[in-house]
Structures are given as structure tokens and as C-alpha cells.
Length: 404
Image (cartoon, rainbow, N blue to C red; front, side, top):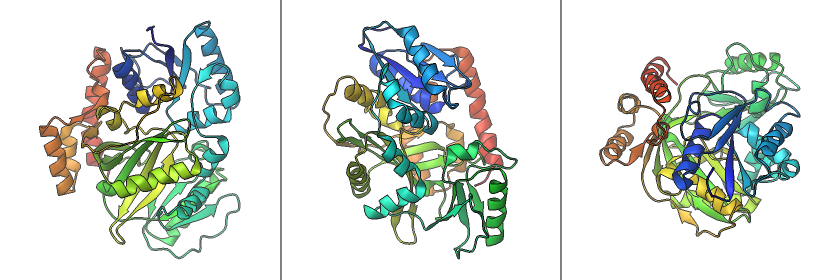
């Protein structure tokens, strides 16, 4: 291990975990340790990861703290701090809920449990948004604990999605989707019945479908230090998202943009609620009234947030400078264009329908202002590269066969 005063330990094994691993490697020439519940090809066999520990019960009730404590005791005694980095909602929630016990061994800075619950419960979150002048889509909340016929009058199509994604996926069923797009009140009732029959007892979000393809979706990444001071604000236009039913909402290509008004609005919202750490907003631009509507805020960096690192604002250094060194940083509004993509160029050229955005994509590629982090040059494992090459070919088939 390096001469650094810390060891990075990343919880997760997916694309987000890989992006954080290479961010640490780029910034510090250090190989992080990963811990997760399943092996995933994004991180498996990587030559820039020290080791990956797989514990299938990691996210189970009562298992998270003991499993991480066992890992810590294997690494101790050490004069290095164990820097813990979460990469998905489940792991971040477990870190926050068990903060006191985990901080006996690990270093990290996150929001408290009360704020997490306010931000992750969509009805509470939308109330907060209204309070601070943030626009959201027209939304109804349906209580699956007390099912009754859906009678609300809405414009169709509408979107249906679970308010509590973690609880939703604990009740799997045939035809389960991350997001449902439905065309009538009857179809709304059918989806409700199917979900309530699975045993899910939380709220469903039934929401106005804002017109526009993937390029009307927007993304913002913000970092606030342990003292709640904002250090970085970004804004990005989605180029493509996944089109398969189980993965809708995962962005596969994003161009970083600049919109000072929205960047400041989101920054001030987070400062007002006392936010700490990385936040990732999902928005959509509504041409009907010319407003950006916020869908949700993820209490972590997103899987497409790597464009921040690519533009010289390495995500790992924000965490390290804050949690390890308590270093003050000036506030940066990122104002440079870069194309992040995990799909091949042929997919972008063939499936991006917005001509203006496609022209920008082609120009950024010509200028060399683009990249796919999964093909990080210093990751030299050939077997992993072969898997990724096959995955790139399959992406073309996925977009051809799945319309959203």
C-alpha cells in the first residue's frame, strides 16, 4: 500500500464503484479495496483495485456493521485512516444509520439520518422543493398500505415509480420495472394492483410525464464539505439513458453544460437544508412552461458523475481533501464541455435523435473532449477488456430492440 495517510475502501462493485476506484488511482496512484455483495464485471479482474471482498449478506439486517468491522480489523493496526466511500443508495443509507459504530474504525462525512429520510421520501422532498422555489412535476402519491381505486384526474401518459426503491426491490415479481409509463387510468390501476399484490407497502409516485426524449433530462453533481459549504456545482445534459425496463433512469451518456441560474438554485437549496457530501440531482426540462423540474436527489455521486473527474475536478480529491485533510476549497461552477459515455460512438450516432445534441456529440469527439471511464488506460487486465468489448457490441443490440 502507498505512503498516503489513508486507505480508500469503496462499498460497492458496480460502474459507480469503478469510477470512484479509478478516480482514486488517477489522483493518488493508489489501489482501493472494494467490498460488495456480488461480483460484477465492471470491477472484477481490474488491475487498479487492490482486492474485492464479496459478502452476499452485506446489505442484510444486522450484517453491514459486523462485515465492515471484520474488514477493518484485518487492516489494523495501522496508522492510516480507513476512508469509507459509498456508491449506491442502500450502502449510503446503511452508513448513515450506523454512523456511530462505523466511525470507531472508518472516516467519512455524510448527512444525518433525519435529513436523509426527508430527502429520500419523495412527498417530503417535494414539499421541501416547493418551500425553496424548486419546480417539480405534477405528482400524486398513492399509499399501497391502504389500497383503494385510483381516482385522480391526470393528463396521460403518466409515470409510475416506487417512492421507496429499496423496499420495492425486496418484493420481486414478474414484469417488475424500475419505471412504468402508462396511457390511461385503467392501466394505472393495473400497475397499482400488480405492485400491491407483491407485498410492497410504501408509496407509489404517479407523475405527469414531461414530454421530450432523453436529451430533455438533466443532471447536476454538487459537493458540500463537512461544514456544509458548497465546493463544486456542475450541470449536465443527458444524451442517452438506458432503455431496458429494469435500467431506465441510468444515464449512459452526458455532456457537461453550464446554467448559472439552475446551478445556484440547487446549491442554495442544499445549503439551506444543511447538506454534506456529494449530491446528484435528476431533472427534466419542460418545454410547456420553460422550467427545469426536479425528480429526485441521490445522496451520493451518480454512475455518470465521472465527467467531474474527467474535467480535472477529481471526485476522490474532494472526499479526501475534506474528510482526511479538512482543506478549504473555493466554490467552483464547472463551465467546460465534456462528453461522458459508456456506450460506443456508433450507438450515439445512431440513437441520439436530437440533431443539435448529436452535432455537439460529434464535435466533442472530434476535439477529443470525451471518454469512456470503463476503458481506463492504466487498467490493463486483458480478460476484463474483452468482456467490455463484447458489452459494447451488445449495447447496439439493446438500443435497437428497446424503445422508451
